[in-house]
Length: 235
Image 1: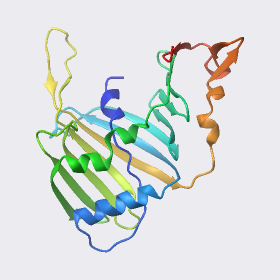
Image 2: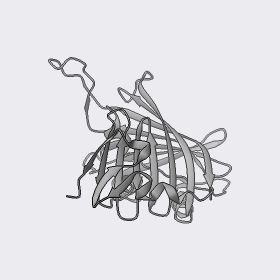
Image 3: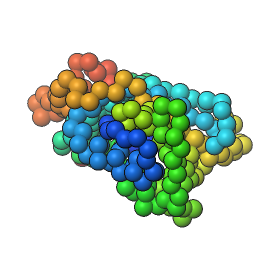
Image 4: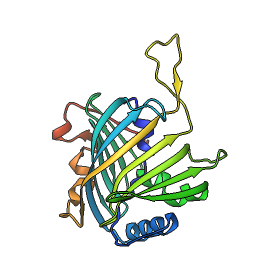
């Protein structure tokens, strides 16, 4: 998937709260506090990739789904599933009919969390819009985070994140001709819908036997993935 690298580092910040008029610092503080108190959450996403920071033309678009409980997370982006269990991580690509099993890893949103972004932030601002707050974080040019700007659209009523815009400082080659390069700094927009706090328990998503079964000390894809190739990267 061409946009996978950019989607992977996309942060997931979904919270609840209530306030009247706030500064950027106060909005971000409330977001962080509410996130810390969320034990289980479920939501759907739409990922839209733009070729440049100013472009309005969508290069690619994918639907997604996330179910998270504590440090365990199941994520689906288009036709690829990611499972972050207690002692394993698994990537399942239905287009390639391939499964990759790895050791335990941090969930994706922790790879680019709000605290890290704020450490590299040189400017913060907030605008009160009709129904939401628009928070803009401008990062330092020397930032280790591969972004120049991050924008958050936060619902004023319940402080749920409606939209996240990531403006990358790194380049992606959009050329379809290997002889010619078309290097651009892309913009990824993530829209969040059907957010449910404390959804029904779905721990089965984090059980390895749901995806892989063991027979005679060998691992094989489970019945639902019987035609897939399994690669155990732990070996």
